[in-house]
Length: 204
Ligand SMILES: Nc1nc2c(c(=O)[nH]1)N(C=O)[C@@H](CNc1ccc(C(=O)N[C@@H](CCC(=O)O)C(=O)O)cc1)CN2
Ligand SMILES: Nc1ncnc2c1ncn2[C@@H]1O[C@H](COP(=O)(O)OP(=O)(O)OP(=O)(O)O)[C@@H](O)[C@H]1O
Image: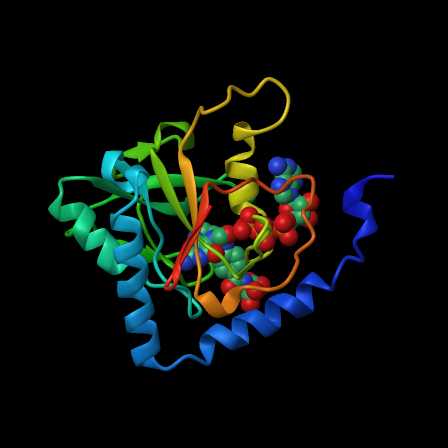
C-alpha cells in the first residue's frame, strides 16, 4: 500500500475555493505588507543572490505581489521572466523576458503576458530561480496551485527517471502565511519546491 493513498484525499477543489477566498479577504494594506515582507525574505536567500535569470509572475486573484522583488532584481541587473501560456502544448509555460518597458497583453485568463514572438524567450531549464504562486501549502512541501498543472508539467523534467539531480532552477513557492493548511495530499506529479516563502519566513 502506498503512503499517498492512505491519506483521505481532501476535496482539492473545495480547499482551493476556501483558500482563494481567504487570501482575497486580506486588506489592501495586508497585501502590501505581505509583498514587502516576502521580498525581504527572498532577497536574503543565497538562491536569489546568485540568480541572474528569475521567473516571476503577474499577481492575480489575491496572490502575493512579486513587484517589490522584481524591482530589486531589476536594480541588481538581474533578468526577470513572466510565464506565458504555451501556444501549442496544452498547459505548459514559456518564460519571456520582462523589462520595465515591455508591453504586456492579457492572456485567456486575463493575466498580462509579454508577446513570446517579439521578446526573448527562455526554456525552463535555463532559468536559475522560479517564483511560483501558491494557493496552499503544508509544512511537508505539499503544494496546491490553481489546478491546471501548468507548473507541474513545465518543471516535470526536474524529477522522474533519468533526471539529473540539481539540474534546472530552484523553485520558490510564494504564499501568504494564512495559506498554510495542516496536510495536503502529495500527488505523484507534484514537483517539489526548494522552499516556500511567506511573509513570516522561509520554509525549506
Ligand atoms: N499570476 C499567475 N500567473 C500564472 C499562473 C498563476 O497561477 N498565477 N499560472 C499557473 O498555473 C498559469 C496560468 N494558469 C491559470 C490557471 C487558472 C486560472 C484561473 O483563474 N482559473 C479560473 C477559471 C478560468 C476558466 O475557467 O477559464 C478559476 O479557477 O476561477 C488562472 C491562471 C500561468 N500564469
Ligand atoms: N507532468 C504532468 N504530466 C501530465 N499531467 C500532469 C502533470 N502534472 C500535472 N498533471 C495534471 O494536471 C492536473 C492538475 O494538477 P494539480 O491539481 O496538482 O495542479 P496544481 O499543482 O494545483 O497546478 P499548477 O502546477 O498549475 O500550480 C492533474 O489532473 C494532473 O493529472
